[in-house]
Image 1: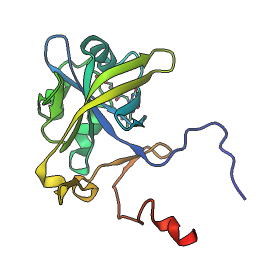
Image 2: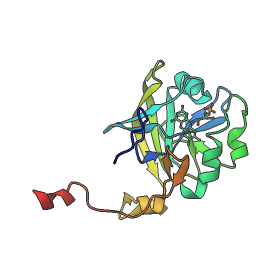
Image 3: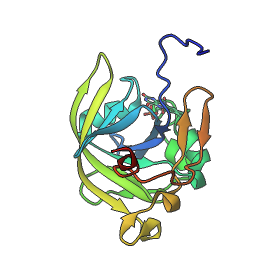
Length: 185
Ligand SMILES: Cc1cc2nc3c(=O)[nH]c(=O)nc-3n(C[C@H](O)[C@H](O)[C@H](O)COP(=O)(O)O)c2cc1C
């Protein structure tokens, strides 16, 4: 028997992405976004509500960073998702996270998050809150690399569980992509 859930976006797993922007006065803002995905080889997709300080900042500055939240930084990453820069202008300072200017764009990268995707705004569609960003650069701490590649086991990103409102750890590799299915070819 299968239970029917009707209309619900029960897609597992969802990422937990920390979006970095600068406020008008140059202070950083960070927010948590789980409605996000790869848009294309060179694009990220986010679904961001127009009332967020982040969106105001992106529409003004046309740039932002995207960093996967990690197990180590779970608490501050959740905090920036439950407090708005509209109400708490120093939310980043209060979170305990620190930022520096990203390499190629004028947006904050988080010191404590090892992977940073630097993006320029491609489009934002207000009605559905659909935002596409063009990736202009990616930086990664040496500590999360294995043989020169980003290693998710070292990054330890957290995963959002939309049904139970939980963050999950990343887990073990389960098989080889573009390869395991060859057994049935
Ligand atoms: C786990 C989690 C996931 C979230 N995902 C999104 C999302 O995908 N899109 C969105 O608009 N808001 C999302 N939020 C809410 C924003 O992070 C939150 O409203 C935040 O305070 C906005 O900050 P800002 O106003 O400083 O930009 C999420 C919050 C949490 C805790």
